Amino acid sequence: MKIGWDRAGQPGVVWRVDPLDDTSVQPERDPELARAAVEGAIIGLRAIAAMGFDVASTTVHLTWIGMNVVDTEATAVRAAACAATADAFGLLDRFELSGDAQGWRCEPTRQ
Image (cartoon, rainbow, N blue to C red):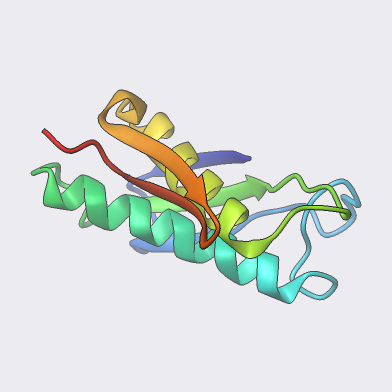
């Protein structure tokens, strides 16, 4: 998962994956995984905001979402996007990834 962010555009999450990159999830080919990536970045932004950081004018750019066609599923992509968003803000150490029979999650670490 590769993302970037800035404060120059509209706040939220934007898809910036090269449409010719067949190593990445693509909305036309993998709509469920593309939606999960966007949702995960939004979850990450909301969690960061809940920690007291100002992300109101932040735009997250999704630039590459890797996958393995055999076993990549939506909860893993969602959790990875959340973690990548936290990492882009230098806050990954405040989040935890966990998984069980229900799927993968990325959540702020409980204090």
